[in-house]
Length: 198
Image 1 (cartoon, helix red, strand yellow):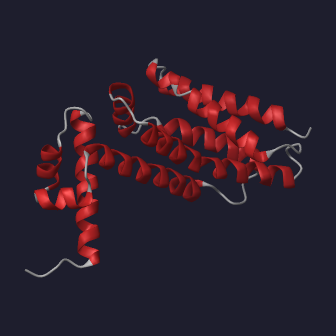
Image 2: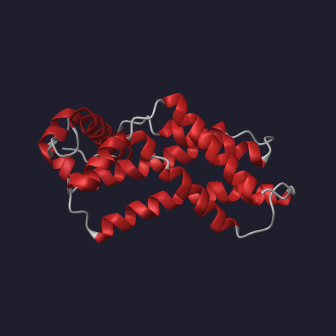
Image 3: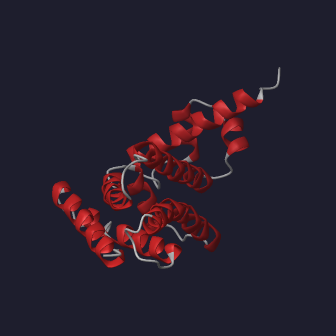
């Protein structure tokens, strides 16, 4: 039997990831077994275990893809001529809209129902930190344009990210979408007011 090309191997890997994501969303993380994922992705047992040693590894790969897609999605929606203040407002809207992604429920289930090991938890934090440079770039742009006062942009990016992430509680409290959007916008306005050069 001929060996698969690198392209075919990657295609199989992506097929498994798509199948796992879909099944996790439909059934939940705990209810989906590796065998269920294998069947859903329509791959052999050898293929799934060649690419992924465990369900947890699959989840982490999907979470990493989601984080990268989030950043790429923001870059596509970001308008280069938009002032930094408007970019922060748009980023707050984008952040809030992301809570509609059903995969986030899967991540929540994983975090709350599993004894997550230190390495996995650290990897999740590392993935979340991938958003910081996006925010920091906007803040640096605002400082350069004179819209924001000089301060540590990395620290401010962390504060903005923590604020947006913390507002995720509204998702669990079933706050209506339009109200949630207004809350995110208000948080961005308060943040901008605090760093405004005027």
